[in-house]
Length: 212
Length: 131
Image (cartoon, rainbow over all chains, first blue to last red; front, side, top):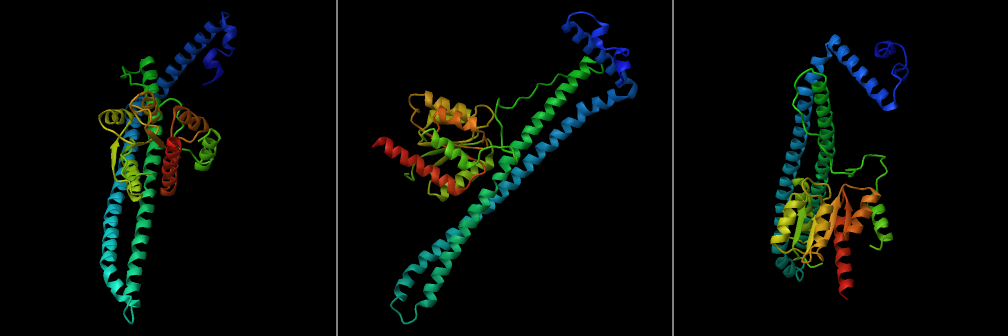
């Protein structure tokens, strides 16, 4: 929008020589009218209505779906981890069954085969348990990515609300007023790369300095 | 720490509740219950007795910090141990949790080793306080 279109080529304050507050309101009102007319001329009102009325809700639904899909995938993985734990428990039972034969074999001439088998089962059990623990921990991504996506959803819904209010105020349509969504006040959420948040060591040092 | 203690796991993400429960089970703590935010945790705490609460911070309804403050303000629950497991990693937040009386603070993502260390530290401090 050109300066001439917005204010006849002159600074707004010079045209409306009243107090600074009135000057501001008059300027905003003029800009709003100009924007309103400009949007109508360009056919933008219907595009904005579409963005606010359907595109943004659709984007939020898709993000909700992403959270639901990752949650489902993480639960599926955790189900498999639990199945794996049952296998580790079975290996543990095998070791228990081998205990007595191994004890008896210690006095025999060549106990190595049996004792070696017991050791192999033990190593397999421990290795499997370590893998399952790592797999389980790796699913933490779902919580952290879910929290980040929910923040984006809140932000997008706020843009939607604001757009609908603007459209309504501009007389484009009788848009329903949506609530402004709010995050928990003051919480920063999951740390982003390079955001300068504390890691566990930093937190431990800080708490130690506080007497923890 | 006594492996038979009753632990309440509080997190709005069901996957994280499950992960914490699995890790606790690996460490031998099998007496666990779950709640999906501070409000439901508060109801559970009113109805049953627990020895430890492992809670997230950022949850709808009632945050983990408000749950902690409620616990410390309640005569029956004031001595309950609270371990916060959260993605909130700002210095001011850690200090706020410490001032509210948290017993341990773990930043997500975390490992089984970190969880084990913090539980042991809470147990140690309990023993020292009792001596």
